[in-house]
Length: 237
Image 1 (cartoon, rainbow, N blue to C red):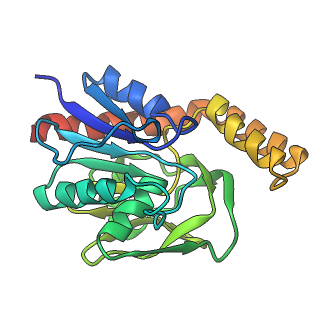
Image 2 (image 1 turned 120 degrees about the vertical axis):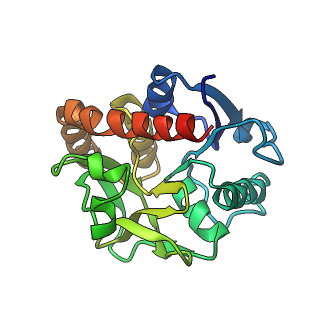
């Protein structure tokens, strides 16, 4: 039987994108819930083999404004409690931390934007998923908030000066960065930041050119990572 993965999407501009395509390539059945369109997340994780929680512009503490966030945090608690393989990306990374007693705040070094090297911790170098990354693996970042305190029992897998970039809690992996993003999706985020006066067009063009130039290497790192996650779901199911 193919693994069924529940994917919680918070906004139109943060789709499953490549992660969704790679999971499908690995034989997974995707069940996408568009929380931003009023679709209600399930109350339990019965009938699924894995959970993916995507990114979004909202904050990890914005429960009052985005009524599905408490349900998302509860599903993340259920996933950790049951050992269900889970992947939490960007906002999902922060929600996983907060749901288990961690803290999220603005990055002390300012926004992280564009392509950065993945800096593995000792735990990351022996992790079942992260240890397979090449030594020069890079990935796209586009964030302001960071996990500033890990939940009890979590292991940091990757850090930068801004804070925790990846951690593992039980069978849940969380990444602040965006293995799912392609250049077209990133351009939508960047164009919005230019319109809002947050970034200059010249800076955006430079960062997008860097991402486009490294795209083949990014795919070579994160497609196997995602397929490894799919394999975990299939083995656990």
